[in-house]
Every structure is written in C-alpha cells, then in structure tokens.
Image 1 (cartoon, rainbow, N blue to C red):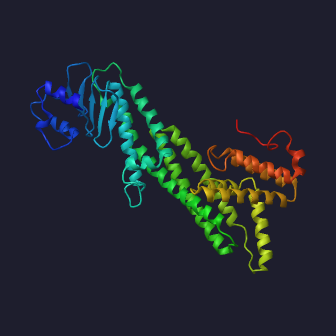
Image 2 (cartoon, helix red, strand yellow):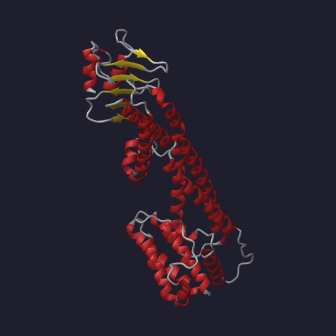
Image 3 (tube, one colour):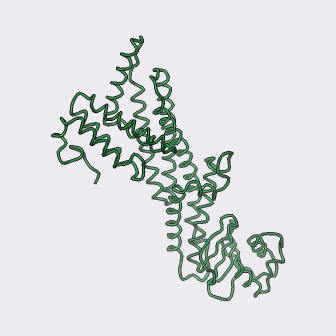
Length: 396
C-alpha cells in the first residue's frame, strides 16, 4: 500500500496523521473522514479519492471494503483479513473484489457449519485451506470463474471503479455462504457414515438382528439428512452461479437418496421370530446378504468400496481391500446361476465408474477383482464376450 500512501501525500494527505497505531488499511479507511480530503460520494454511498493518472483511485465501499486501483501495483490481489483489494485496472478490481466477497462468504459458511473456529477444528479459513487442499481447490476454481465473470461484465471503458456494477454479485454472497455451510455440514455427516461403515467392516462376528436394525435405521436417518443438505447446497450454489459445485452437490444428493432407499429396503426384510440354530441363522442371513448385494438397486457394494477408500491408515486400507476382494470372489463362487454372477460383475463395473482414479480401490483394482471372478466362474465367459459386462448400457 506504499504507492497509495505516496499518492495521498501528493494530495497533501498524510495517512499516518490518523490512527498511527492502526494497520495501514485501517488508517486509509480513517482518511475518508478527514474534512480536508477531496472525496467524491457516489449515489450508492461509495466514497472515492481520485489520483492523477487515469483510473487511479482509492474507494471505500458502503460495506467497508477498501479498493485501491493503481497501475504501479506489481499484481492484482486481495487481503481477506484487511478487506482490501489492490488492482491495476478497474475491471481487475471488479474481479478481485468479487473473489474477496465470496471468500468472506465461504469463511462465514464454514463457521456456520462448525468446520472452523471450534475446539479440535482449524481456527481460521487459512488453516482449513492448508489442511483440506482438495476441497479448497474446488472452491478456488469456482470462485476464480465467478471473479472472471465479474471482470468481463464490468464496463471496461469506465474511468471509475463502480461497485454498483457488481450488484448482481452482491446478491450471490448470501446464497454462496448458505451453500458452503450446507455442503460441509453434509460432508461431516457423510464422513461419519463412511467411518461407521468402515468400522463395521473390520469387526468380526455375527451381528444380532436388533443391533443391525438400529444401525440401518441410524444410517437411513443420517443419509436422509445428508441428502437434504446436499440438495440445499445444490440449489444455493445454482443461485450463486457456482455451477461446478452445484453439479457435485446434485450428484451427492442423488447418491444419498438412493442410499436411503436401499437402507429402507434392507430394514423391511422380515426378521426370524424364534431364534433357530445359530449356524443355520448365520447361513440364512449370509444368503440374504448375498442376494441383496447383487440386486440392481442396491448400493451396498459401492458404499463398501467408498468406505475402504476413506480409511486414512494405508496398512488398514490395504488389509480391508484384500478382504473385500476375497469376499466378493467367494460370493461369486457361491452364486447358483451365471445370471447372478453377471449381475455381480455389473455391480463391480458400476462401482469402478463412480470412484476416482487416484482412490486405493480404483477401476484398475476392481477390474482385477473381476478377472478373479471370471477365473473362478468360467461358466459365465460365453455370456461376457468382448464386452466387460454384457447388455450394460454405458453412459453416453
């Protein structure tokens, strides 16, 4: 901000004369209250100090954002904590101010969702970005697009930076903040669902019917709430023009709607009233579980893959993946008809299409699992042919 201070001194204004102990940005805000400062007041309430060169100015917006436009700046940037924008042209100022406002909305949304500012959580937005690089990059990409849109919609020939031109983008701040709060609240629920599923995978023994029913009811309740929050985030992101994030939320909302329906279907299976021999009961439940696993609408296999991919410890993840592959191959061997094996292969292929390539259980490893199944069940080879899954409708 040294260049702006120099420009003010050329006009007989010393920023250090007000609030000497304050930050540079705070002193510059106080300058606008000096009676001797030649300050223009725009219809929208913005206060503007013009300098000698074209477009060069210092503007204080009605919301308290400080925008400095000077061709001598080395780069276009914003300081979120100081609510300060430095830009070389008025159109670049529109870009940077939009991004700064949206990041303030992100910060408010993360606090609302209790993702930052709580015990055992990152204290600031900066800490959260450092610890959650992947999610932060998604927000960065979308905000960069919205900032560029603001820049392009700005009147490039205007001599003054006009915050009023960004009225449309001001309207996006609130829905963007609500969308961020809803999305990360849903992500917290989703992490809990996956963690509990992963924990159940690692547990050994037979689950009694009551414990299983409670787990399914709890999962349905959490999945339903996550789906609702993802849907809210989708609608608000669309309202803010954040189409990339809206598409991601729409995908997750649909996924958890399917998961909820699947859980309800599983919970509706009638339980045995009189407990028979434990071994017979175990075999019956295993048969029901296998039959459910290969049903077209069931998401159990995909959810298991996602749960394994969410495990942080690499050794545990590798062990779970090996157990999963062995279990799926054993199921394939026990299936009675080739048609049932084909259905299981379809489920594996669907899972491979919906996991990221950099996941541990990715498309390559799931393809190897498919190969093991075909080796154990050569009777289905004539039905497979050249296609990886027969009669499978691939997405266009």
